[in-house]
Amino acid sequence: MERVDCVGALVYDEQHRLLVVRRAHDPGRGLWSIPGGRVESGEDDPTAVAREVAEETGLTVKVGELVGEVERPGPRGQLYVIRDYGATAVGGTLTAGDDATDARFVTRSEFAALPTTTLLVSTLEQWNALPG
Image 1 (tube, rainbow, N blue to C red):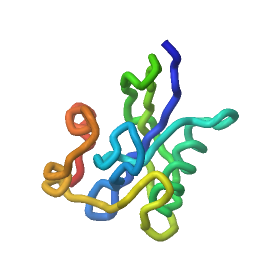
Image 2 (cartoon, rainbow, N blue to C red):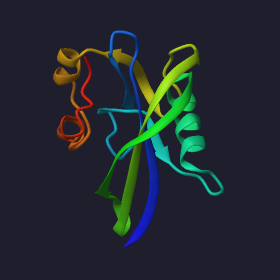
Image 3 (cartoon, one colour):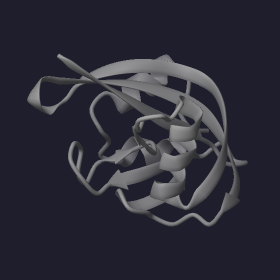
């Protein structure tokens, strides 16, 4: 099984709302998730997190600590190994970017009502990382 290193960002605003994006491409096209994607060759995780958040949301972030890691099956026998980091927005303007059709901060009740990617809600519950 081919391992694909990926990262994600848990970004909260002052009201502890969570930054989410609606995915523009598969896997998960049309579903909501946290910003993230593949780690490119030569990148470390913090660099990949900052790049992915900027590309998908227009925001500049300061990347913090590792929150958790999950593995998800991918196409063609791939295994996505996803490391999610806490991050703080420090600049930019929130707007959906290249891999997202929408980007917004959501409360816990708004988050619960969204169609999300597989296991996102239960994973964030386990990590005590749900919004608000």
